[in-house]
Image: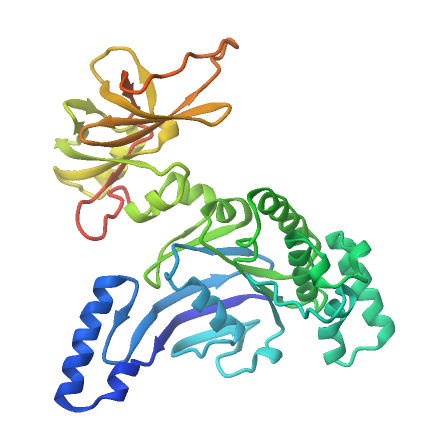
Length: 407
């Protein structure tokens, strides 16, 4: 069993500026530095304790579950992973692996393995030597080492490279070796810190497939960190979306796509990004309607019920619609107009960037109709009409939380 429990985990880095200077002058300089730091990067929260990278992280991970921590750069996901690995000290809270408190346990005694973004292979060793190195440290018999190395190499398709050194391998092959060195130990928990970010697009697609296959073959719990939401959606059983060190939403890929908890999650998950409009939610008795750009849209019955259950009043809102849920139309009472700014040919579809209601709106248009005929192109400056249904809209509060009003 390899259950992982993170309870109220915190990470605070010392405020070195304050430590170097004492007294009133030092405090003033610290406050000035704090203000300028916050102006440059909102992800850093500077308190009297220090720089608060992860304020309060809570997550329960089941045995053999594949959990992905995803978010923009600087959101605290790698810091959280490094605390699980023991490479960063935990400032507060409790980390349990298999029911055992791990806060003060050395990394080598946690029965975990980590795959780094930079591969971290020994350049003077062959692939075989790189794979066997962690087993030799455990003083495992040579015959057993050879068996495990051969099995790992076969699983990852790198048997023919065993006698080569890392410099003679491609990026994808090196990453396979790095993964092999981790799984050969048969760890309870396998940690991966953006392992595919150094690869080109084609190799990333191939390695994602390899990791999915690998997950079925080894008996480990996976914690995977990435800023690429495509990786998160394709790999994870559950996704943990982070921002400024805080968890925004935890759920399956489908859950966070269909029911984002707030505007940040809605905008982060999905390619292209969700369209957002300034709108008004109007309640009349038990019924709701959304007014945007002179058009009135009635939310679906399910959405109406959830809004009523939370007693949501009439208010200004941010209306969200994914590009794939917007349709081009010709006339009608529920259509909006836009002018084509950019037309991106994507093969089976065209991404139209429209200027509408004073903002950029993206519409995904299929290049082939259901009858097999091809649609014509769209000229820059052309005026088109578009619409969307009440079952695909998302309603968010306009306050600082940007929360989903259906939750």
